Image 1 (cartoon, rainbow, N blue to C red):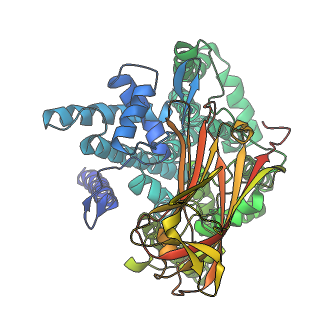
Image 2: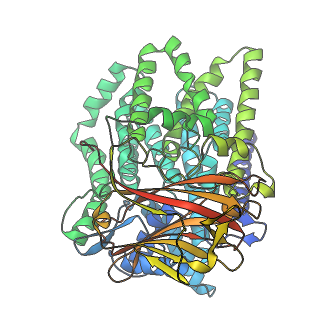
Image 3: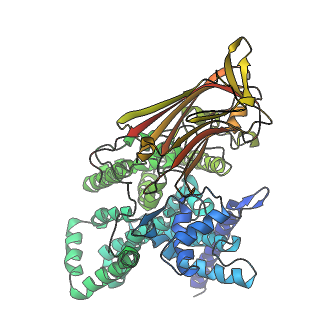
Length: 623
């Protein structure tokens, strides 16, 4: 009896220690030297979360009031790209699963917000901290079930614990659990871990409770991120043998078990179906509108290796884990084949998404959802390294990878790594750099169309500043302020445009209600010469694209830095290349402005501006 009690106390202390450390990381993840973050929700996280204020604050399934509130909090140019007008209602392209899991924490912290005098609109700092606690809870839940999954495959407790902790600190799961808690990935990781464990245990012992747990978790997996229902294809390979699989398959078709399997999942998926019906009168829609998969043109090399977001480059732990398939190949060739086919399938699908790097985020974020599987592969690899020198060698490599991930996580959090537009030059410029001087120094002038697609040239606009005649010079469609136009020092007939401490805007291209604006897939290539007078002045100056509709409402706004990587050269002419892709959905632009904004009012010069517009031709087959 005393030994049993001591074991229970030891486990309780272990979990208390684990939760305490996790809470510490939540604290640190939201801390900055100037104080705590008051805006924890960012990027797509605002879209996943928006269901909660829409339903519980505004009591509506129309996201218009939520968008207006977000504009008040953030910026008048804020677009909320996850909202689309459909059937006279502003809908959310994201399904409601993430918000459903966040809802208990939202309601609790909203209640305490009112009690303590904070706003109850769902965006108080206290409410947003509730989302950090939610991500912590589901992250720990996912790790708990991932460990139980590993143990069910026969791995000892130490190996299982080591594998999940290495993935927590050695992958971008750490980032999405502690530093960007509003994204869907930690919630998907959690529910996939629960699903894999439930199915595994049902194969092993056939108990009904695991059917119920599997049904609930598969419903939530779909509701959080429908793409992840692909995990269903892997479930048969959790069985020990084909005989065991067939035996349990027969058992599950018993009426009592079939009800447990189908009803919870159908009810959960039905939540989203009911919402769509209430919004626009249809039971299911493709809420992503023009977004989709290009299955015949996957960006496999970019997805795995690119400097922009490559899976293996930013999370090398995944590459090491893939070696676990080789271990399986020696022990269980058929299971190794199944692993290989499934991993290839999800990589192919993810790399086929229209935006193969998935926008802002640290590393290849959609893969976080499937990390429970890679933890299992890592455990196979660790177990196979039985000889002392192999084991210490593997752990040395894993330690390096873990530290590499934590340093890059810090870099991303401090804006040393750019959230979208990394390339080779930028990557090596900031490689392993953590000093304050490297924070927020990289430009973003590369706005790709994500894959090589055919384009058709529409029109070109040029400005060389060589014929300025009035204080404000207008020659359609340009607007130039003459006070900033000066002759070149060596050629009085050749003029250039000067930006300095009193010059904030210039070189305005204004396009109004032309055929250019009718394009649904408009791309602009911008090129001009620049010469910096102040050091790195063009790192802080931006080129802006801004479109408004007939009501003068901003439907597109994007500033992009003129220069990509800092240097100390001044007085030397260089060329700026900027690519800009315009997407305004069903909105109709009446005016497009493109201009240079010298927001810090530093000194530089530009000349020979050329802007080319193209129509991007979509692929014939999008799935």
